[in-house]
Image 1 (tube, one colour):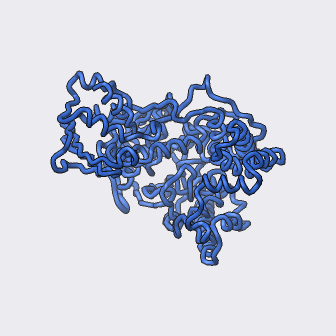
Image 2: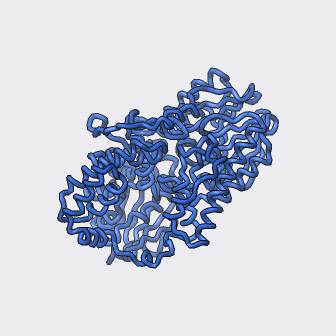
Image 3: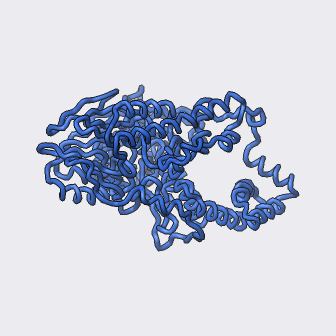
Length: 574
């Protein structure tokens, strides 16, 4: 029985926060910091900024802004920070302005830096929470199904493990304050909408509009009386993230352009983004919105034009640059998104991964290509010397690419390869003025030096409560080991008496079918409370105690259940 409990704990598929003990964290050699990156901090000076007599925005208390709208007898908050800790600091500042209760919180979209401080901002109040109807779907997806890969890449991109010398800022804010000490306080949306929603709270009339752009659940908030537009992440003081290197579903540039056109038609006097400073003055706002949409359309149109001419993604990324009048705009500098990345993503969005070159239709595997390249240059040692020479010649990108092949060769000194990678990554990262690229390079350098982003896990108990049981089962299906389950046919049914839910996992030779009802005659049946199940998966509850308390009951072969659960392995345990 104890072995079963240990194996259940292994199936950890909930979103977690990774951190590393600072005492054991390796050091980086940072020999350069771009001046432009230092200067860009002027885009998000920390403080509470008054937009009108009843509207204030908190900037740089976390990565994203939080906005206060004061009504007759209560307040509305737009966006809720990334953690209870950052939100508590903002809450204290808002209380200096007014002590009126929080009647509503509006999420502009699902990203963690906009939702995970809601509990602290709400305090003892019970606010209505408004969001687009897609928001819950994306929250569940990033917290369960793709949590391992997305969390790891997010930690690299935002530089969460980096010290201040390496992490200058995140381009749209100083720092994403996540880590072991952060607690996450999500309140699920209580009111959702499809296209638009008019709300009136405490004498304040607002319009919520669906405006897909950086996300497919983006909400913009229009305050017609004051002619103030709260635009979420559809505009900030940087070239937009039409593609983010942490990974995301396709962000359709034309949808983003359409949303910006909608924002232009509203003719706001003030534009308040959820990152960086507000934009004031109707003419200025219109000019900024127009340049922003033109830049997005330009990159889209020129990418499609090049595709139709037969150009490959790499060629397009090298050739497409913003026209001069857009390239000089302070709102289109590449401090968050990069044209290079966006071009490739647009190509992929239209045509998929295959670039059209027949040599890439059925290419050699990376391992075979590494072996062939080593043969071509005279063997593994010759390839290693070529990479070392590239470091000496300060061709750091070439050295990094060669090291990819060297890592796949068995007859090579791996410590020498690691040294090449560290030097290349440190140099490339240090010289990047784009924070996302800088952080990704430098964090990967730390990983080469021994940092393990999966080393320590931290899950907020409050977050576990908000995750639907169904989402945990969806994440199990993508954790199935295809080798271990290749010859297995097994049907296990889980009953959750406290939520009156039933879920089945039916493994059929490499595929786990999930249904939210009983399938046929199960081989094994498990009766367990939903919160107990989620806390065991998140390693917040001792499974032995759960069995002792009678919260878990098994009908069927315990040995077979052990083998069944062993087939599901999260990324950290694979």
